[in-house]
Image 1 (tube, rainbow, N blue to C red):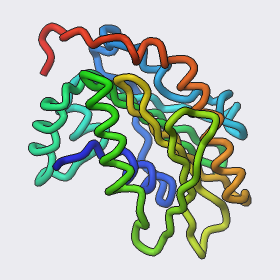
Image 2 (cartoon, one colour):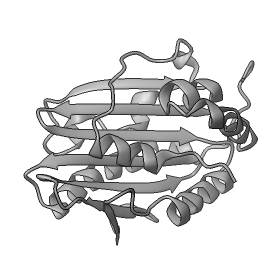
Image 3 (cartoon, one colour):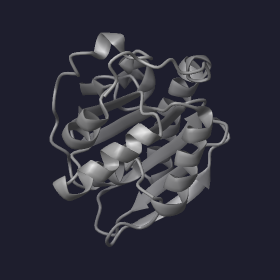
Length: 217
């Protein structure tokens, strides 16, 4: 089964800085949920209040897979088809940079809460695992119902990376960060703070039934 590859994107960008891209999809004004509401604001992530932010959003499965997640051409067609089957409504990505510290906040909005729960379970089972020589440690996150916390452990790293993954209604959300000179607990705490802010802001909107957008592609 093709998955929305949220966790690998977060892992890759925390361990190797991603190329930032400014701007948003031209149809962002018609997105089901305002893009900025689905990602963590700089002030909501401890240590990132003065960070530079780059936000990208789209309601196009093709744009999400190829231009934002940058899927390889060989897998893009299958991923786009899978996104459409799951009722892809919207995708948002925000990258924050503050000196040597980085954070990445992503969210997808699907057709139903059932689809979002299935996506969360698939990501948890298949993607929260070690990448290369890194180790991924999971933990409970009481502050966010049903959330999964994780730390990325790299022996040669001078800092720490952490993140949180959860579903609320039709939305699947991932927040991750890398903090230079920090402990794993500090990195996880920062991501949880951002994730909790998102959860409380969008929970009601994400639980509303989806409306089929005109001209969705």
